[in-house]
Image 1 (cartoon, rainbow, N blue to C red):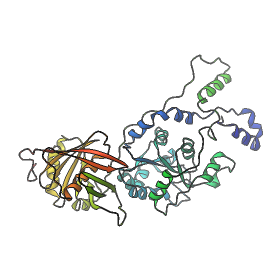
Image 2: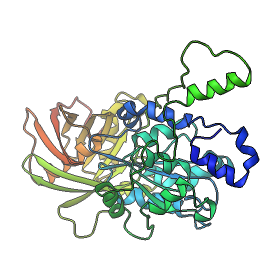
Image 3: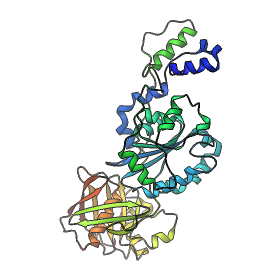
Image 4: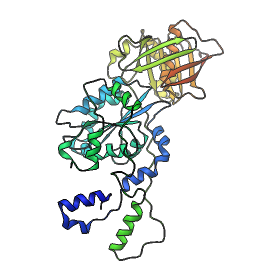
Length: 420
């Protein structure tokens, strides 16, 4: 079963006696992806990609020359923490697609241990069997190697940076080898953010949906069934032949438990914000720290300006959000705000001065609610106090302005920092 007449010609050169057994029947994997392109926005939401965010997908094939092996230099395990540290959290979402044989060869526990630092900075590990096609359809850019996933991405007009070309593994006459030779190269020793931004902003080699991948896009189900029934010497059913549609993956938003540095610039009710593990030296604005309570480093909580947690607002284990926020400001004297993220667009904030606020996304806002809380912190640090009716902040991030409603709440007796 071949997907393109070009493969028949190569087969004829290397094994002419096999040509009579060959059939050009397209690529059902690619056809399923073509059929699912209309659902790109859903696949992005499943990965927790928010308004203005760019989804960067790293992929690796399974042999030592792939990105995960890279000639036994282990580039990818070091590349992912660096990438997730450099890319601002609200501007980028990062996911990794590793070949099933990588998971099988090393074991899920080892893979997750190697990539734990990156996962704590927001990396998504995509299901290597049932989720990788959806991730590629959702991607804004792919960082990969000479495996078929990179080529599928390019065929779907997703820009690709190649970090491991695997020239020794490829037939130089294949369309895949030609693509790898043309594709821009990733340099793991230079600024990754700069390279990603240039890829997103610039031209990239165009690989049409029919060029190299398949000569009969959308027809593989029909051709495969036709051939199977011919082999069985049976008449085909009257109903059309269809492929199983790609399923909608489970919702998998990022959960960042590694500390974040937050850079802000305040102008009235407008707050420009950038959150990342690393803030470039000399960048304008004020910087504070935001730390998730589940951080690996307990000392980070001692120095945090904001301490964040996410969960159900009335979780009895925490005493509800009121009990948790009161406990945090009592336990950590340095902490100026305790932030309880209670949903994808809402958080509750308690200040050290015992003020309590509900922050919620207004129409057109779509950020991590912890970013809303950091914007409120920046406003307070600039000496601006929220009036009793509340205020609407305009948070600038990911190339958009996100209106956020800040509403003061009345404290119940016994809910102050002196007690739960």
